[in-house]
Image (cartoon, rainbow, N blue to C red; front, side, top):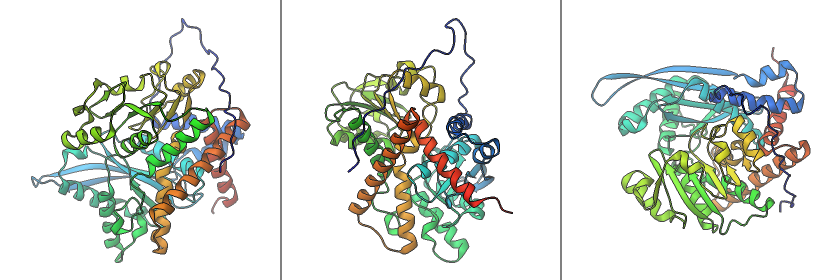
Length: 438
């Protein structure tokens, strides 16, 4: 059992400027605000300049051209990335996203966040991330397969079960992971199940992996609610992003008795203050391809963030809660199922308003945790039953939440900074113990 702790008092942020002055536009580059988060933790840890430089820069950045033959027999060339931020604590680990907005800076930020995420839950991985600048919805299934296989062949020089292990991310699925595993295996001449996680179960995937990110997020919400003496039963919630993580979080909240009043996807959202039924929302999504086809008042993704709810789950992309809209966010708990949805300036505003932000490197760490379980199962060819996966996941997330809350309490700061102090400290220790070669 996790020992009960008092909620850390949240101190209102003091004003830093005169109202008449106009601030410069907020920098929404994800890598820049990942660096700002890191520097804040580094200050608490009193890291020297050399260590800061070492931990803030990626170990390796790979940019590849991906030529494929389209269904119309014409050739198109896409750009792909694989960034390894750190291998101080073990082989690098991180998902691959297919999205038209993928950039090198985004992938660098995501790789850094993966390093901290793995350290927060204390699993023996470093951080990596990959992506292709593409809208996969505009490609056929065959084109998606050719794109995935060619990308895998281009980045195969850095992959391996003991080197760098990809996983699903935005717009990639277990099927994409199966293609990656098969392509890499063909280059090796034998099956290498552990080179990728998030695979279909018949190919060495783990029970519970599909809903792991959401389940970990729900456990973190439950921990936050207990510390705030908030009952989930009857609490109101809004979920931005109804993909794999968002849809499952919404279902878990509904099953716990919370009232999910709004959900959204890339086309917009629906809102009903009396509560939505997730069964009907899922049916509309499956039938029409969007939650907006379901019943409820239509709302935009930005409007959803500002609804009067107890719990807000940003489960889409980074940079959606900014300095501009943070003052209007009313949720008491913000659980970041997405990576980097809150900017540093917005963090300060939310804290000053009394909101508890469960940071991405804790709130969505369930996915990489069960990816680690899958990797272990593949290496030993010994697979766990769903109950064991669920039990180990819950234990890991609750222990990590406790470690983060204790670090935040000790340094009299918020959960994000507490999580970063804990994670950066663990990575710094491993880096220092290993030393530099040669």
